[in-house]
Image 1 (tube, rainbow, N blue to C red):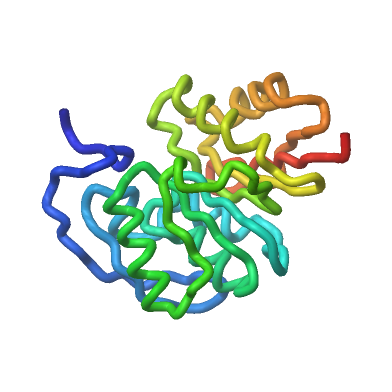
Image 2: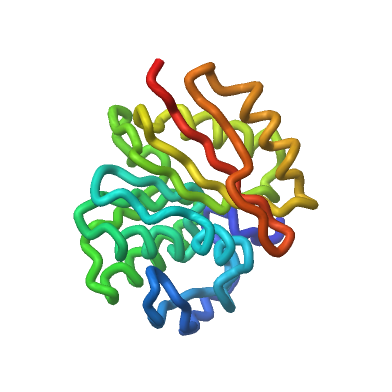
Length: 203
């Protein structure tokens, strides 16, 4: 089977490369590699999410679902050095890159992990994600059903989804699936992408 960025162990050559990106308002150099999502540049969806999300809370536990080489996680960690940022992915090569980039940027608050390494009692102050739409609806829905309910009360999630890849139907599915204390709305639109906001209210 061909490699995908959601392969746990990509078999393709690593082919490390350096790219320059803007994270948390700073130009930084990061390392990426083949076999991970968007290795050559900061992809447009993540760019839209970073530009259209509010400032991260000053502290707490944050989650980046489908972190890739770490753009969102690194941005959050740079904004909020007192927070604990969980960078979640199935791709071990991606997780290695997150660790490498966090260390190089002097960020000791990033934890690059697989799902089983996140303690079950943690509630997240915020979730930010460019979710892996191309894994297919059943797998994507399972991922969101696992993590969105882990928002803390008054916590929120911001997710970016391309309009022509089903952002509107995903918004309806989230509304229909999550319990009543969650609300979902379209937070922003830009460059063919929607940023969806999910908020957890007091029960």
